[in-house]
Image (cartoon, rainbow, N blue to C red; front, side, top):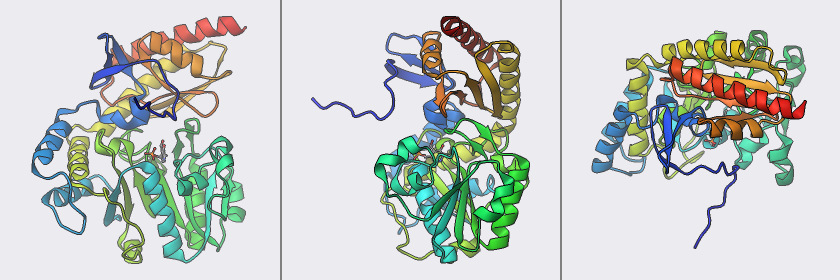
Length: 387
Ligand SMILES: Cc1ncc(COP(=O)(O)O)c(C=O)c1O
């Protein structure tokens, strides 16, 4: 009998089914899902609009190469056009966030003819070898080096260092405007503004990785809208397919026209099921005003966390944007995750000491109360043990 090789920590929970913001284990116990498979189920588990679209597509056509045209791809393009900035005239679909990053890095090199890339401390862009080259955490990188050469890491939010860091040699700069895996770290407005100015100045591409932040999670469709700048290449994943594995690379026409046939490829990229999932998710985003709901729920969540955890000594800070929240602790987050799970709330970690919350957009006030009560109780219990 084969065993599954896990790369993530075993959480000791056998999940049976899920609906909206909840999952149930095999014993029928209900959990509030603030983990959402690393942020994927932002549109809710089993959203009927997405499930229906997938079922319909399943019965018609599951797979065809993107050498051939399909109606579902045209429909997906129509729906997606309504939720991406107008400057992006082209999109290509891949299967995971890391793959989107791989393509973006190649595009930067192709477009500029340059070889150097810039990323930032605490960044996370995936674990395939190209994406890993721009992911900062040494724990993920060190045993797999050498990675892609000519990658420089600047200090996240160090706007003053950008002029030296980004030069006429720089093909592209990749950044998350809110770092997810790295600790729920928000970029400052000055940093992003200077990043945009400097990349324009030297002619390097600004790649904004919205695999985690994109598609409504932060209260806008795209988190970089908060910064009033435009990306050259925009990446999406996770929430984009409503649970179906798919990612997207958006680019304007002048960039797309430089990309050559054979520069990239993916057997499954842009398959009809992925197109159906993205089409339905994009429709839902607009029809349900998902970003506005995420903004309102995110405000409630952060407010509740701040007031409930005020004075809890082991909490260093609470930060977030929309429905992406982080509680920075004075110790490792794993015991809190375990304790919260016992209380019926599924959380995840970020960085070394951060508890991360990535709930679905329909999380209610009662859910928020459930979550904050459980987290508070866990933190008080654990801090009494270590103090
Ligand atoms: C910002 C960002 N980029 C890229 C990735 C990699 O995505 P995937 O795990 O789908 O390959 C992630 C995953 O967490 C991410 O948060």
